[in-house]
Length: 435
Ligand SMILES: Cc1cc2nc3c(=O)[nH]c(=O)nc-3n(C[C@H](O)[C@H](O)[C@H](O)COP(=O)(O)OP(=O)(O)OC[C@H]3O[C@@H](n4cnc5c(N)ncnc54)[C@H](O)[C@@H]3O)c2cc1C
Image 1 (tube, rainbow, N blue to C red):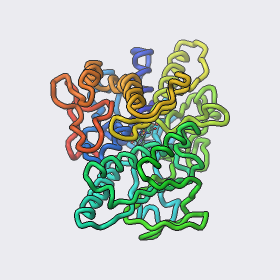
Image 2 (tube, protein in one colour):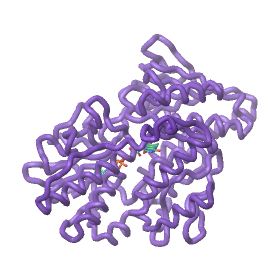
Image 3 (cartoon, rainbow, N blue to C red):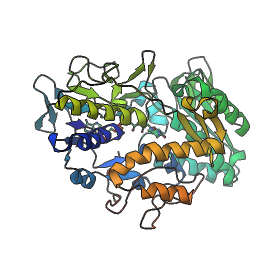
Image 4 (cartoon, rainbow, N blue to C red):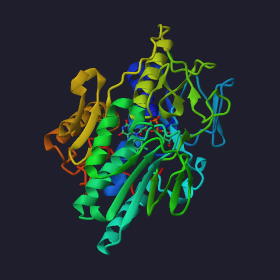
């Protein structure tokens, strides 16, 4: 049984079906009827329709003989080997928990009330309205200050860095940048800390070049209706506040060993729970030690690689073979920072892997095509889409010739993302659940 229909859960279920064939009965329990391709949700504030990021799960799972149950997993009873869904107990032999992370803005007084978050498509639509209000203000020659805050315990602030830089580009294109002051504050002691120290200089240079005021080591303590107070005694006023709140596990499972935020504690070598070797935890739901001193960052690769490992392990255990240890392979850190511009830190490419500008954006594109579209192909069953993306450069196409992602109004070209609607998959309508 697999809990969660995100990167980790889907990779587990589809890989296991491929490896074990009919020897494994696979049940996928997920509380949403669609997979949401979160990486591209950063384009929603700039015009992308969030429905285009959703892929319904019923047909790809049915095609692979994976039983799909749309329900929320409430409790896990490891002794009885059962999961409690809404009013239903479902037994398992092996369990993979991939229920992802959630946000806890209430950890910072005032953050939930006054800041716009960047977690769900609904948040992103609120952010779009906020950004549009900046343009409106500039038409009346009114100045505005946009303040970004990253509080402690945010597992992966990368998307917010992408958004602030895209906002700068978008405002410039709209002729409204002069009237908007952009200020960045983070508790981190270097920029994009989750990706290690090497991207700091690149991000700092980019902030300077664009006139974005940045502060590291500024820990937000309290948010009020018009100002943010920091632990170092500083205070900053704002007209629009954007905050990426602290992370918690999306669903706590009290019967299983977890840290204080509900993230399940797994064994470094096996990805299985220390006390229950038949239970795996992958992706954002788990504390994923990568090296003893460094967790796997909260990115899709954590879920994809963890899920693949869980599937391989189960397959081997079904046939009584030895199971190899999990090794996280760092594909590198890449971020988009503007129109056809990015920053990369890809250790396995040596000095060549540390780039910025157009070349970095090209590497980012390549990596997304190789790894994320490979993942999406599990759902949409075509590699032709990837080819189409490459050959059309900026415009993703369907094999039907219909645009896969709508043109992103401003400022970015459609990202190298997967999804929706290929020949067999209809994109959800507006009633498709916002997560
Ligand atoms: C704005 C944003 C941008 C991002 N950009 C990138 C990027 O560019 N590259 C990158 O690699 N990563 C990016 N990430 C991070 C990436 O999306 C996550 O690391 C990844 O989604 C984690 O995968 P997962 O399978 O662990 O969890 P998720 O993808 O969150 O999936 C968890 C699933 O479980 C379901 N679920 C939760 N609780 C239950 C329950 N009790 N019962 C049943 N189902 C449940 C959820 O509804 C969801 O479908 C971004 C994240 C955000 C928020």
